Amino acid sequence: MVDIIDAAGWPIWPLIFSSIIAVAIIFERLWALRASIIAPDNLLLEAQKMITKDGVKKEAIQSLQNHSMLGEIFASALNNYNSPSEIIKEAIEETGRAVNHKLERYLSTLGTIATIAPLLGLFGTIIGMVELFSSFTSGGNDVAVFARGISIALYNTAGGIVVAVPAMIAYRFFRAKIDTLIVEMEQQAIKLVEIINGNRK
Image (cartoon, rainbow, N blue to C red; front, side):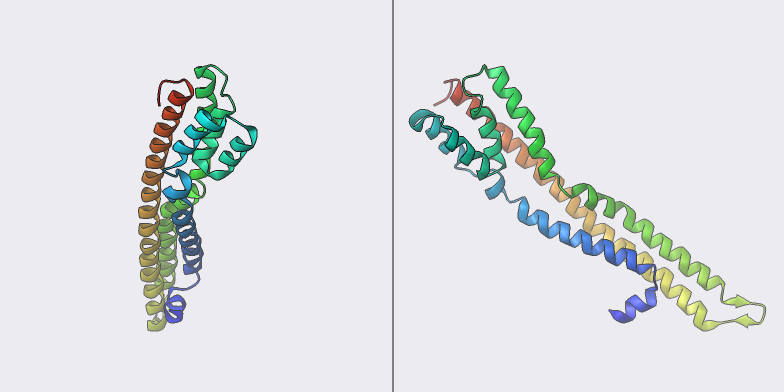
């Protein structure tokens, strides 16, 4: 690995730095976007029990808000328990936007890395080509400099692709996962509003 980095020259370092950030984001999002901690299956039943049996208490709402992101949405609805349906829905939508922002955390950085990695690779390729052509002098051709330019160009081109492809795949995967989670939370929120209005048992 050290030999490859040495052969790729200094232009490879921005790609290495980008790859480290991308890997960190991927693992962080894999951990953070688990459905079990974003939108637990049993949370609607707990909220329904709170409404029908225990009553809507401030402490219970606070506990619900700290439970998960879906809990934050439920808490915003229960904080407006005695308000008209339009007010409850507006509160849910407002909290939903904040939750969506949290779900998309770091994704713009990951998408940026997927976009710029090939450009960084191309930059390294250009540097390699410049060094390659510098091997041609009036006194002849310096083979060592020529080979060095070729290795810089090829390694950086490959490096840009190696970083960009997984980053883009992960970005698309997380986007789809977030969309699925949002739809699920919307459905759960609608059911909660129906329970609050007495239209659902």
